Image 1 (cartoon, helix red, strand yellow):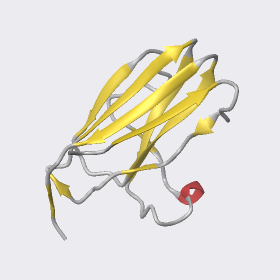
Image 2 (image 1 turned 45 degrees about the vertical axis):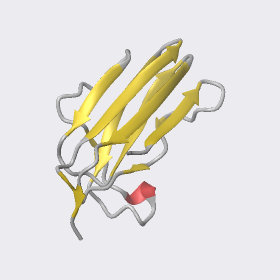
Image 3 (image 1 turned 180 degrees about the vertical axis):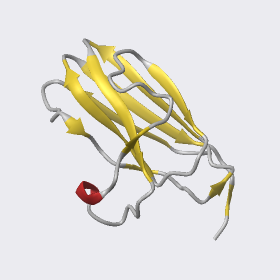
Image 4 (image 1 turned 90 degrees about the horizontal axis):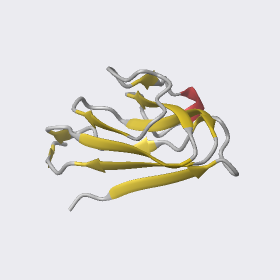
Length: 113
């Protein structure tokens, strides 16, 4: 069974900008990950970003890109399907007045080493 990675952010503790780096297994075939951004309360303005950089280094140095077909500045609960290999994703919060949660689950597949 695949593990669910979940992070919750609220206005009292969040620093605007890129949030926690969520590592994914890019070697799985086929690569699939479901990403849910759930607006628990209040409002949020966000984007989901990905990198293909080696995630063993400093996240500040990673090159982050917005998930294709996702308009920057989303304000509602959304579900996204990633079907191309990435090494990590993160939530980038531009503004927030309540609480939001990002949940990521990666499908089981064959890992090729």
